[in-house]
Length: 509
Image 1 (cartoon, rainbow, N blue to C red):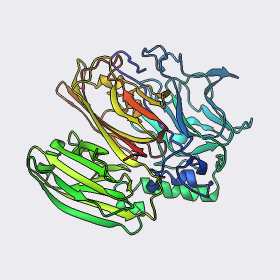
Image 2: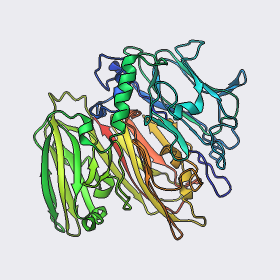
Image 3: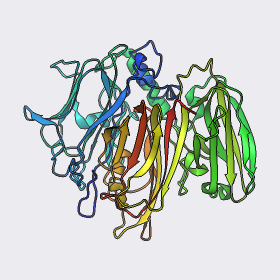
Image 4: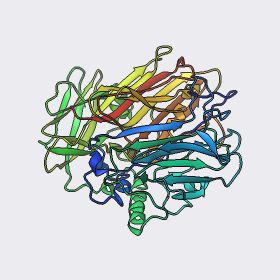
């Protein structure tokens, strides 16, 4: 579960998200296994493709008893000690490491472990020689060949890395010594090794080139041109919403894919966007797939300053959302408001060659708990069907006796197809940060390509924390059902207010 330390919480999520695309798994029909995993880091049109026979799972140091020892004492911080070193994860079969997160171990001191220079060793395909054997911190500092910034970084209280490490026949992750505290290793399983190319270090020339391309794209967040969209078609409309009079915008006939949505307007108008409802219906469905406050769809609740991420954010020109939204025949965007609201809405689409059912429809589920009920998890998304989860946006605020958002102690939990597969170690960990309210850690707003806290502030005795995380490289698949949720506070009884949007693709509109 989460952890609490006298007045301060630890643990940050440092994400090494490493996605391998297996052609038989259905995400991307690629013939180039050497670079396909890397290309998925930035070729966003791959994101909606449905997965088959794939699961996402995670090893982590969360307290199995339901308490707060998620790493303080190291009770659950390793599978075992082997030759004086810590085995953090051990997998069989074909798959790919998706995320390794290791925060600062001690809140008052920088560093991942108790002493410096510890190596991480990753053994693949049953080999006794590690495929990767480097100082752990060097990975996150961008000092290791094949791990360029900003695909890696030290973050705000946590370290993250999103460089793919696929394997064909098993994997073992070992860190020198026994000082590991907070950690998580997220990985993906595949039904077979077909199409899987095992990670090597250093990378090949073609892999290095692909990594450089991905790093360049991540350095260009918010720039539509960097997406490389072919033959985009833009629909733009000045929208004036009157109370009780919804405004509809019909998209061009499909099959097409929305590649960008923009909202712009006066600062005064955009401040009222939280009271405007955005719905999107795909292919004649009566029930909207997207049904959220307008500001939350663009990650703009609580009035953040300008910030950019790979999928959503803001620029001087307005707000943007770059989540791909494929549809077979029709798409209808509707805005409703109880007060007058005016803005300019622009939607960019591109043609799909055909509609074969291999794409999922984008869904966005909004939930609020003001505050959530005691002992009840705050939901991010609940779904019966087939698809994969691709992102979370959550705005929280509340009052505490100490000037810090202590409700961030709550752990995230993903149950797919009735099986618990991912259990994290704290909310700020899930959002790739850590050690809130600690100098040099999460102390103010931050934004990275796939995660961040665009709003983090103390207002008198009121704390505000707004965060996002995109599962671009590490979507969480489900074949029958999905339940994504988070504790509110260490004991699931925080009185903070929660508003969230869970983004996912599903086979049904």
